[in-house]
Image (cartoon, rainbow, N blue to C red; front, side, top):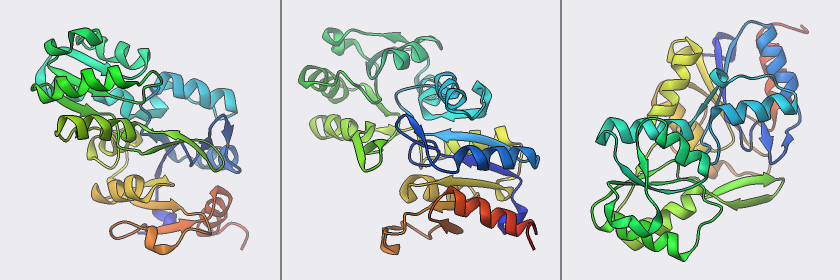
Length: 269
């Protein structure tokens, strides 16, 4: 399998297409070129703050036109994961109001923190209001038998070059440590998000490329479902940072990826 044979591309968002409120260099140009060439394209995000509709609006505002169907977000998949496993249940939510609304949208009922003992499930996303009281309620609920779900296990959330906020995974680990229970994880590198992205692309897994900056989630997860994988690897990152078999290709940035893609198509020869 080579870059020339790829028919559909799934791009991570945080750290790949954008960092905080800004597109990364080459992002808009690469997306436009791929679309103009007729390639299927989706954005596959581990986001635990916002769902596909909000992420699509942000992309469009930054200059990459996108609709809800162009985005696959772990945020949107967690409600279905809980429903598939437990049916509609009372849920304790550590996350944004948008996450709670997504859960309520498929029939779950959000509980206030002081009713933690009634929870059948605890769902943890990136929670700007996270504090000791919320940690206590969530960990007690999990320890008492509530099923524990994490949107993702990303330790950091990139907000700008060399700057980050604590990610969903950091909060999940706090609940897991206090409750002594490990979570069911929905986002990358677990397969549900990648399988959904492949279905949206309409390509065979081997004709679909996962492009991302996180080898432990984007690359490991993409390879596990049979995707061609492309790692955006900063030049200063040692090869030892790779996890598992490693990517099919690696590039320093999106401009380098576009040059390689054009060369594979025979452009400029």
